[in-house]
Length: 333
Length: 205
Image (cartoon, rainbow over all chains, first blue to last red; front, side, top):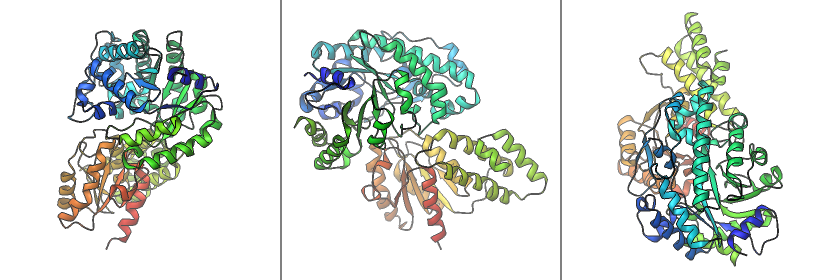
């Protein structure tokens, strides 16, 4: 089976030749290639080259045309600061109140900020890899984009103080994600990871997720799913167990499970939903390869069908390559 | 009623109740101890591992801060439990968790010196020396801060501050053990941090 076939079969709970494995390698690909992160985040050819090099090295099942969590907000007018060795952060947010969203227009992904970089990276990766492995793009989920446009503190208070204006902001965030997501699928991505860490129950109460976010995620996944993007993937870190039962109705096909979630309980909550996870991300920095192998064995023992072995979140930039090898080797042998 | 309004995160009614209590002669310090601190204890009890979210704590924290400003308009909440230094270390600008912890600590009677985000660890240590803090708290969301947090104890020792405790928290740091980070304690959340500091505070001479 190819990596893509393996993942698609896993999502359908069909038999596979081995467990699919997706270490969430984003900027780590630049680190191991010796490329400055800022080059990786601003140059599609560099990103594609680093992802291909990481794939050759680790032999996993998916590559990522994914920059950082600031692509959309930058395209909408936020000013970023790029540190020397880390991901950028927002220096000045695009808007100061949720009602100011009325002044924003959905950006054109072929022109706005670094959106074209991501599109070109997806195009290059798909051209090079075809359907051998999954090529994943990424859009921000509505809660996270709202936080990235307003600042997290301001956005969270707005959800309570100005719910109507905040819901308009969330709707706008979905419009941005739909347009950017469609562009990524047209460029060659097999799917777009919907990355929404701010929707985590660690940040907002499950009731807010159910009332405000789930309907919007449903609209987003309905728009993204189709012949070009047959599978959807929701990535929310942290203790997602209380909101997991809402995922199938939102149209989620793959659910990210972080290290802090008990996999058995997650499986019991959503018996027919493909799960990916859930090795502790920092273990790739502070543990030995043998520890990773043991952790993978424990996870795989109870995982069953419909499971993709992965890190609970991003593999840290400074991860030890031998630990990533241990993750992949635990299913490749 | 004040505690209930605070737990609801209802700043407006909490403020009105605080004004009524003050007008009826209630001492400001009692209002802090029996209102703000009790509300924070209630929030702590509610925030089990399975039921913990930043937004509800932020709302209670915001209401508590509004009451504290009303009672102590000059900006000084009477500190009864000693001074701590808090910061998000250099390289990390995600300070939401740090800000929430600051609010909760202040409401619980700690004097909090906030060194901000993207803060050099040497600045945290200098603040601890200058302000006679009994603990330094590092909040980190991303993994590159790990090696910086490991330096804190050594830097404190260089200044002779061997009695100052180091506490770590935040999404990245709480994945580590205290031993791996070379700190005294790794807090699961803001309330776990406070429980540790309260014990420490009681044990101090």
